Image (cartoon, rainbow, N blue to C red):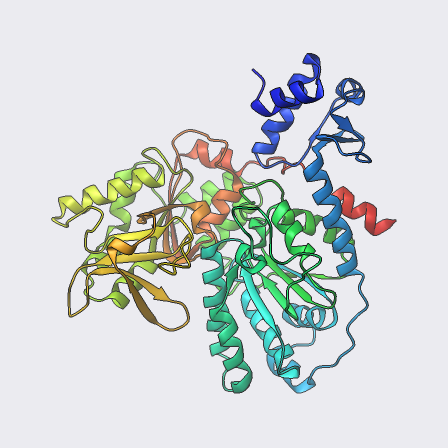
Length: 541
């Protein structure tokens, strides 16, 4: 049965019945995150005479370039991105100097990767900084901001990320990095701390209007900043990337941070992956720097070895790490898919959350532990694990329910005007204890303080003992329990497992069976897009 989109094309553009399966396949691929599909020669011949299809030189619903089929909207967005990226990476080098002493203080080591980031960031309008979790991407970004602000007291800067949670995390990480530099650059750091507290989602940065789908800032009204830092770029989708590049003014520095091995965007496109491929081909004019030294965990211990195995698509090696984790110093544990056993393993870290008596202590305890699930629904999903943990709490004599003391919650909508909360913010319900008013308490990034939101004023939210891996992206915890479904699932990929595992600072527990782990680690063909080819075309023309 053809999709609604295909039926619309048949009605308005007389798409022949024989072409329906091909068009259906494209729309299915679009829904799965691809921006194009490749056609067989006979399919190319079939669509070549279809009035709904062109070669991109006239506006039609679908565009056929060679054997690649795309929608007009996606094709045009990729073409614009390629052209704008070319302008950024081929712009004349910025020759304004920086204080050599400041450079040496912030970036010691003439050959260090962090110093290479600094040189690219100082001299170029575009810098792509990639690296795994804990490799210092936000730290080097903070140092670069200090270096540039030390030269220019009026430097206008913006910090952003694709989601509210990632934006808050970026602000916290930048603030923490700045705290360590205060002794050397006191005046500069105080100015940058203000920017760190104003970290925004990209939609807010661009002034996106949900009702109209338009942005306040665009090519005719560019963003009023000298430097823009964007974190968690693996979550960037094609259309958001297109809007961001359109709003970048000539002379503005754009710094992109991310890990292309993590989960891709929910919407179509694989922006960071395509940028990485372009860098590997030498198409970004030296604008890419890879950070590979890990500061979060020992790469030779459990988490590091497990992450490497998953990253290398080696399911057997991943299982070897999981089942050989009895050696001293290893931090990885394997519980098969027995969920009660998995809950037992993390229970000593759950109890302090409900036993704490003040907001700071409760939130600190919560930050140490999180259950991450591949799915949202079902017994192995976030909803099922939240219910399982609450059942266990009830058995221990702890109250449960929407207003239960110690219940962690995650906000699921943006609500900046009323509660000031954003999608992805995590807080905890506390009743009147130790002189604190009953309400939901949230951390105030970079301050060590909390803020209270009345229960009745809370925007839409859910229980947050367990989250999906997607929701956790951009966060980190001391201990992570990663729960995978008992059977293989299209959503359970090496990127998902890698993202879940690397959310942990100290310990990972994996609840899954061997077949699912092997299947998840297996290499899969990346999303199909046309952006890389368009970048290569414009950069080599």
